[in-house]
Image (cartoon, rainbow, N blue to C red; front, side):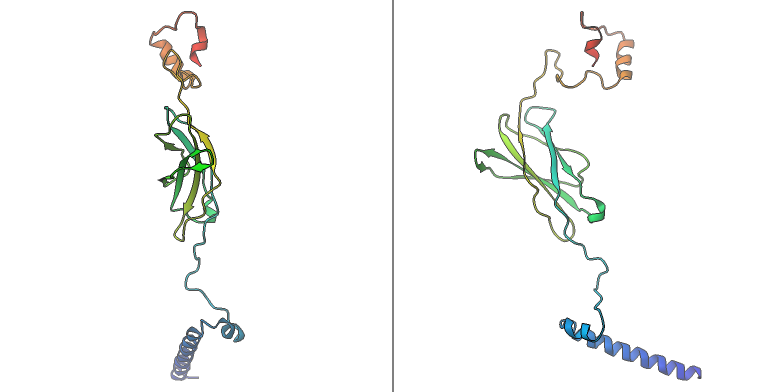
Length: 190
């Protein structure tokens, strides 16, 4: 077979494949015809993003000051798709009624989200959701939290937080020559 005849056959094959492609494209709405011909349609995009699974609020704890809270969102695994951002919403709950929601966007769920301006003694509900390029997933199940006052002891420190973060900071404090309060011994160091 000569090179010219091979080129002619190649051109005919390309022309037939192009015509067949146009035919398949015209009947693409009728998938039964495509399947009956023994073909399986290929999608334009290899991986279409799918909706994300539901996320949740892991916990809500008292914040560093009165009227604040720290909300922790459970991150969605990367294997389920890329999260563009998360949203946290909260509202006051009075009896059976729920007030208007305040929504806080967050780009990551690894760190707690600080919620401010909560009224001490009020119960709040918190919910989270995530979005990707397709859409938002559903809001999570609500988590309740009661805002409280932060009580400080006579030294001005929070009673549940240590005076020193580590042994080395305690040792540095001692080397600077600041004495303990009389009668406290080592109990003031933790």
